[in-house]
Length: 365
Ligand SMILES: Cc1ncc(COP(=O)(O)O)c(C=O)c1O
Image 1 (tube, rainbow, N blue to C red):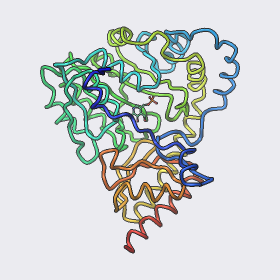
Image 2 (cartoon, rainbow, N blue to C red; image 1 turned 90 degrees about the vertical axis):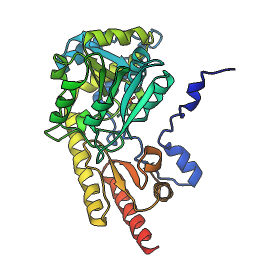
Image 3 (cartoon, rainbow, N blue to C red; image 1 turned 180 degrees about the horizontal axis):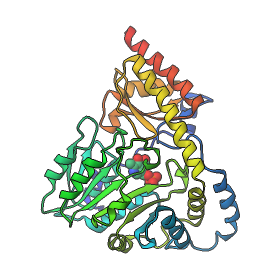
């Protein structure tokens, strides 16, 4: 068989290690996963009720247009229903954007390191990658702007960025959007939007009226705690949504996912509580880093990229043996660092103790 040659250059996505694998491999009974930026507080109880009530309808295909969810989310976000597109996770919207706008002879601008799926999908489409290094962990929007040329079709701005957790301010983004050519699509990936507390973070939905060449990506996988259900969405001008609909699969989001997402947005109290707890637990981790003299990037998300003062893979293995799954910075373009999801209080007790012993042992060597 002869696959497209270029797909062989696309690395198969390596997810955070599953808990059961680690338990089996290391003979541990208690393992915590702080590797994939999931919500340690689970999901709202109203989601479960709504899903159980919807269990009878599984023989019927889902509503391909996600109409009920579309209306309710449009009202919640104060946008028009035609401005929304839903995906099997926001991952699938990244795929649809790449499919709709990129091909051989075009290029796409992104930061490095950033969320790996942009690179993978651009490569699958045969477009060239123009990767611009982060500056102090933040997107260098001026350099990204300077990289845009006649062949550029899509620019990816992950804000806040994964894996650094850092954000670009409203002023920076506005200055950038003002200069991006109108025929270049700017993707603003806001997967961690609900976690952001910085006042200078851009509120991008109102900008859609002025900048028609924008799409905002958000997800139910992070603060809403529904990563297993795979549902995310894009907010854009109807023209962009209509382009994406040409490449969208017929029933790309499941009925239960749609029901769960509707219930999830109805419980904003849960979202607020998770965000507050996240900040409290983040502070415990960054305080410990300060105490141990470890550098970290200021994060507006539910994870933090922190220095480990030894090889990242070694630090990853050290924590793994203590039953804590994190992400090695080597795999994320940040050698010498680990990316750690902000867990709950109990999980962080374990993490902080393990971090402390990791650093003290390294110092003794
Ligand atoms: C920046 C960013 N965008 C998108 C995604 C994908 O999320 P989803 O679960 O909605 O596909 C992630 C997941 O980690 C992410 O970090």
